[in-house]
Amino acid sequence: MNNEGMQVPQTPAQPPRTCALATWSLVLGILTFCCFGFLAGIPAVICGHIALSRIRRSAGTLWGEGMATAGLVLGYIGIFLLPILAGMLLPALSRARESARRAACLNNLKQLITAIKTYTPDYDEYYPTSAEPGQSISVSDHYKDLGILYPMYCPALDLFTCPSSGDKMPRRRLDGTYDNKPFRDSEARQVSYAYSYNGSGRNVAWSEAAPSTTRILADRRATRELTPRSNHKMDGRNVAFADGHVKWVSGRRKFLTDPDHPDHRISNKSWWSERPD
Image 1 (spheres, rainbow, N blue to C red):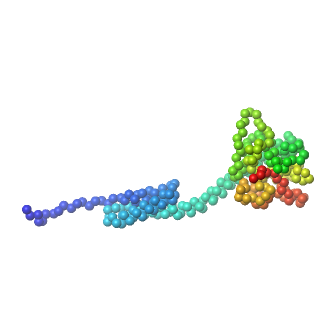
Image 2 (image 1 turned 180 degrees about the vertical axis):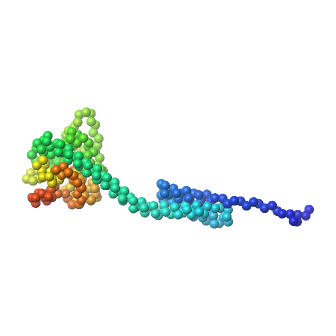
Image 3 (image 1 turned 45 degrees about the horizontal axis):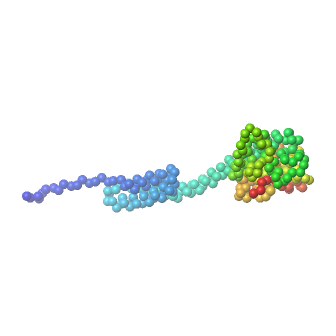
């Protein structure tokens, strides 16, 4: 039988397939921006390079070069650009958080100085002290006398801690009878603020006779320069004054009790009681 002239049937051409690695590269590249950052960026780049290599060697049987290229671009952005952006944003976020904590600290001092002003009419105009009014105080322990305010004049222990300090008051069990005595040792070790005293002549607690410019409460480390361990690092301190106002004071040097006092023998003094480190 003569087969000359007969046509041999042609095998139909297979349509090109999508390269799976190209798809993975694009998906991982998108995930780079969603939540995984460089953890998805690295495999996106690897899959993209392998996919492009296979597509170019496939003689048209694979497609997806555009997806692989897009995955590569997104992956490289995730690896190199996002960390740079994060490095620029994180300090700004940190500053914003510290600014909020500083404002909360200022509010704590405002409530404490208000509590002191509420206390003084009941105790011969003297600020909280465990000594008899007008008698010498224990300077090293005077800061503990702030605990006298709790809970009758100051209802929350957390007001004695600065949010930036990391100090945290232990919880008391209140069974209906309030302990209106100075801080327990466990609580005194968490007080974030310094409490000033009148060191003129003899060491006594301030009274309402104190000049309005007298600094009564301030962030810790008032008797020395600030360090990175200070409540607000080395930026400055929040302070409450005898007239009841509070404000932020910049500077890292030791804190004077009343630098505006007309008597230079008092204006250069640092009369503070605070918990030891």
